[in-house]
Length: 459
Image (tube, rainbow, N blue to C red; front, side, top):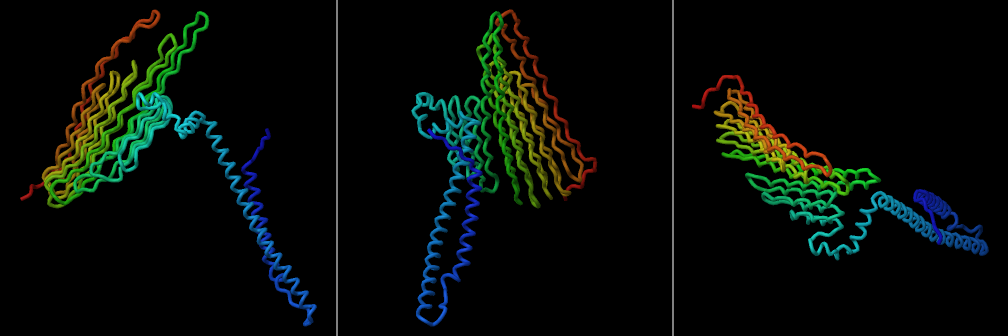
């Protein structure tokens, strides 16, 4: 068997040189065309006329052959250039396959349809290998789940438009695989509200811990590897801003944060089990929408901040993930109105299992109005989540020429339950002590009011 080694960059350089040679030959043929295809007779006699006609015929034949040679040369250069590109593409594909041979192999086999006959897929609805299918664009369809062992979850289908439409969630990731991306929320057409942003896909599960090493002689078996951490949940979308000159206008509520991924399982095979993975942190709640209005309005209320996502569940023995922080309330601004109420802060996310920390409550929204108003109501701070107590959200701030009291912060939630003691080891080790109960969260600070005198009331 013979082998050929090709350097794509050298082939491309040779094609460029041949192109330059062809251009020079065409220019020379065009320059000689005038003097070789039109030859005047040396005299008025018959012999001179025949000789000039012979030279003209030779020049015309040369130009015809030169045009054919130029066309062949051009085709040859194009073929050589295409060959250089094909070699370069093959080199890039080989380099990518060498960097990640398993993913390349799975992708090539999946195109053949071999995975469609997987008995595991028939029994569970999910194959052992392969990537999940993407959701159809514009439908909000969820992405398909990937294989149990290898593959990535499909991306969720986004929405083009729709009233209060929810975008599709990303497909679940396999063991060690990444979860699919959540689809884009559709924009709604309406007077009072906008479409909610799509929920971010759940984080993929942590990878399994490595197996413990085998013992040698009287030695003790190796310790199993720790499970991977769960993925962080997606951040909730921000609420839309409401605007109007009528009576009541409400800003859109912030989207909820995505849930954190589950922790990975510990590896087996050692005398001592490996450490288990910690659950992922919950996503942060979305910011509440803002509201503004002008003359003649009675009440202007803005959107509340979204609740923080729940912390991911830890694997057996692992800690639960921390709850996501509540979203901040939106800001209300009113001119010549009775009152402008700031939005409430979102509640903190709850810890999924014992040991997780709850998310802090979101801050209350600010309220502001211009001189002729009667009351500027502040936003209430969000409550802390369950688990180790999250801090209460701060009260909203009143911005006004007239003096008003600042908002009161809400109480923090109760502390989490103490963890259970660990079981005794395989040899003579004692069980671990139970975890300490979490402390209750501190109450939020009240906002400071302005020190100016109260303004005169409306007649």
